[in-house]
Amino acid sequence: MVIDATLGMGGHSEAMLQRFPDLHLIGIDRDEEALALAGSG
Image (cartoon, rainbow, N blue to C red):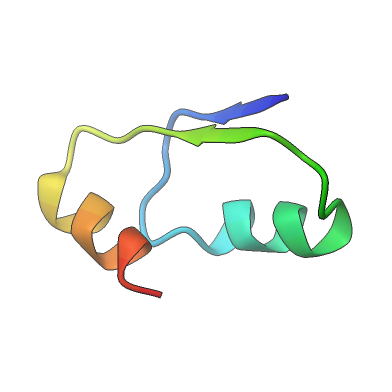
């Protein structure tokens, strides 16, 4: 399990999920606009 506490636009999280497809990842960020962008992909 990984917690990405600076999700931003999700680039690092996406790379981790591509490398480890069975990874459980929780992404959080204080910027609601960044969360919306990360979830739109």
